[in-house]
Amino acid sequence: MIELENVAYSYGGGELLSDISLELSSGSFHFLTGPSGAGKTTFLKLCYGALMPTAGQVRLFGGDVRDLGRDDIALMRRRIGVVHQDCQFLDHLPVADNVALPLMVSGYEGGEQAENLRELMSWVGLNARAGALPPELSGGERQRAALARAVIMSPDVVLADEPTGNIDWEMSQRLLQLLIELNRMGKTIMIATHDLNLIRAAKSQVQARVLRISQRQVQLAGADL
Ligand SMILES: Nc1ncnc2c1ncn2[C@@H]1O[C@H](COP(=O)(O)OP(=O)(O)O)[C@@H](O)[C@H]1O
Ligand SMILES: [Mg+2]
Image (cartoon, rainbow, N blue to C red):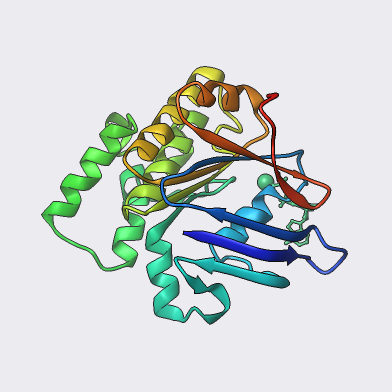
């Protein structure tokens, strides 16, 4: 699905990430951990083609990101759903419209989509909040809306950047359950988080690999969590 070969990334100063080779295979569940500033968000951006590696090769669904044309990028946006760390919304549009935005942008219409949207809103527990505006949502509601928006195009892969960053433990658990459910449906999941308790909670339910960014490298963490 997503392959990195000898990948490095630098924002212009020294290398932030160096010589990373890794494969996220179909149906796998990964955590990505490491201290703030280690490069988790940067790594995820490399994984969905928002950043081009400064060295090495990133292949998405078999194709080198450097060779992707506009159509390929549009297709990839559909196949990789992203829950962004800051989960921004259009504040003047109701939550349901925000969630449906990727559908609108790609020109989908019709009753079937409306039904899918309702199902998705109820899956994340936001049916009652569908008409609310984003600034009226709690942190947990925002995160669930961001997750719904990330999966509305039925992506194969879901990348979530600190999805439980600003929410309480109970809500984190609920969000984690949704991501585990997606994985059971066959989706490839990667969650960037520095919450080791969340990782422990997941590990009892799903076979998850834990990657840690340390000294510019992405390493497989041991079982000592
Ligand atoms: N657009 C950017 N330009 C320059 N430096 C950046 C940019 N984005 C992030 N950085 C720097 O790269 C480092 C890693 O950032 P990031 O990937 O956001 O880490 P994390 O998500 O693990 O906290 C930080 O030192 C950050 O300041
Ligand atoms: Mg980050």
